[in-house]
Length: 86
Picture 1 (tube, rainbow, N blue to C red):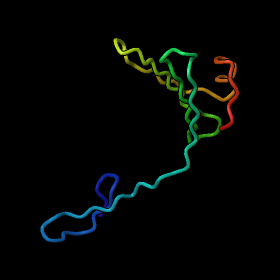
Picture 2 (picture 1 turned 45 degrees about the horizontal axis):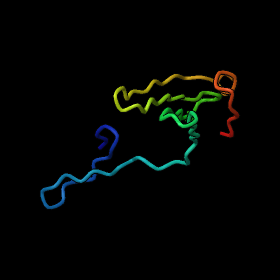
Picture 3 (picture 1 turned 180 degrees about the vertical axis):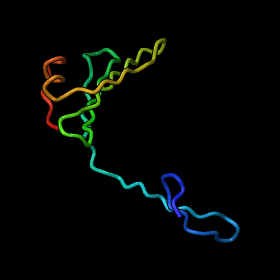
Picture 4 (picture 1 turned 90 degrees about the horizontal axis):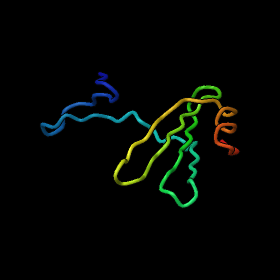
């Protein structure tokens, strides 16, 4: 029986046993740092054709936050003046 993202296997010694259905995949991530600042950008290839998550990470301790956008490879390379290999 399926329960959310895991399969129900059975009850062993009173414990409910679940089978994890998640498999590790190849990483398709590139990260970039902005000079000596604690500002980083992570580009993550999605499973969709020419779609990438761009996660901007502001690492200043007093205002730690991030922003995520979805862009194409050409949009990323033009906006950030970088070359992606993923």
